[in-house]
Length: 112
Image (cartoon, rainbow, N blue to C red; front, side, top):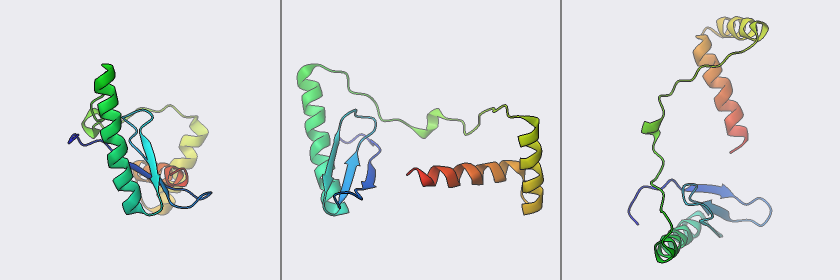
C-alpha cells in the first residue's frame, strides 16, 4: 500500500468533479466532487485493487520510475524540418534542443 504509485487527477468537464487513476494499476480509478474527495476515494480504490489482486493471485506491478528513462532519444526528421527548427531556435536565441523541448512540452500540455 505504501509503494509510490503515480496518481493522475483529471478534471471531469462533463460531470464536474475529478476523475483519479493509478496508471500502473490497470483499471484502478475513482472520482470525487473535490480534489480532496477524489484523492481519498483513489486511496480506497487502490487498497481494494491491491486486496483483490492478492486474493486472486494476480501479479502486482511495481510503480514506474523516472530512473528507467535517460531523458534522451534519437529522432530522424526531414532535412527541411531540421532547417526550420534550427532557424526558429536561432531566431528565439535558444538552442535547438531547448526549442524542441519547449514545443514538445506545449503540445503535451494540450493533452493533459
